[in-house]
Amino acid sequence: MLNDKGMTTAEYAIGTLAAAGLATVLLVVLKGDWVMGLLQGLLQKAFTAGT
Image 1 (tube, rainbow, N blue to C red):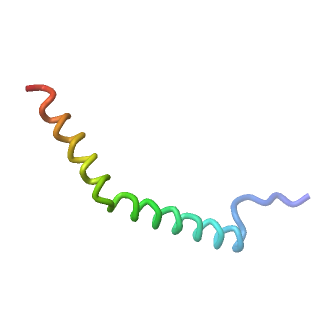
Image 2 (cartoon, one colour; image 1 turned 90 degrees about the vertical axis):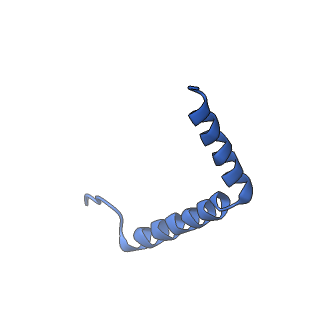
């Protein structure tokens, strides 16, 4: 029996497409105004919590 370690070329292609798709979705979500507002609010809370 053959020992298949790692991914074959077709699996690399599918894995690469899946990673690119996930990166695109994350980019679209993270560039949204509501995400920026949420992150700014969290950072303001974090920096003013100790004062």
